Image 1 (cartoon, rainbow, N blue to C red):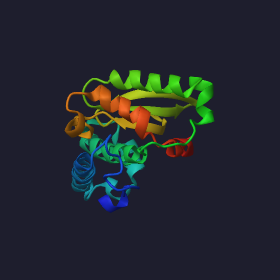
Image 2 (cartoon, one colour):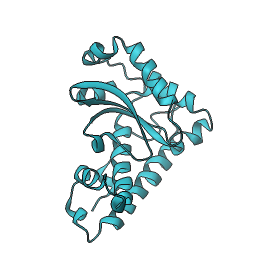
Image 3 (cartoon, helix red, strand yellow):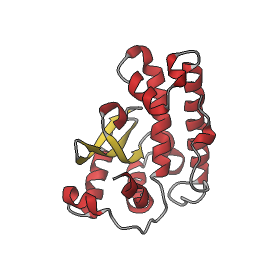
Image 4 (cartoon, one colour):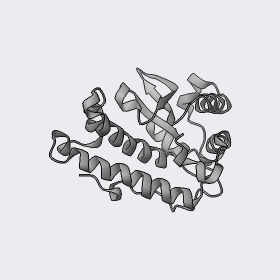
Length: 193
């Protein structure tokens, strides 16, 4: 069974202000992530999934309508934990050199990331992934994530309303701008390459 304590934040909830408030982090981390964990525990109790790690649950539940609720909750645990690790206020680390071959410059990467993020309709995620040795920016809807598509996650941005609405209301583009300009944890990105 899973516990919120297994997914601790690496920082205090107010450290991302003014870009993401502690109020948003309280709801996003404690309430939303906590609810996904609680839901998953109830769904897998007494099933074969009860003894699997999170990634195996995601893979095994991703291709069947019968396990869709298990997939949605397990994937959202993974997605949120990964997203929270992607956040660092005003990281002064350099743009990873491994990404220059694909994107040519930090500016071009950030612009492409923003374009894809702004193209997400409704709830979803934008990801930098590695697939078959190539880096690319992709979007997923709802709880979908790279693990279900044999991709390796490098960076993500949560585009569900609960991630930004308390701070930005309907200004999702401002939230995206603040993420790409002020909140990417480049050390975490480098470590994932």
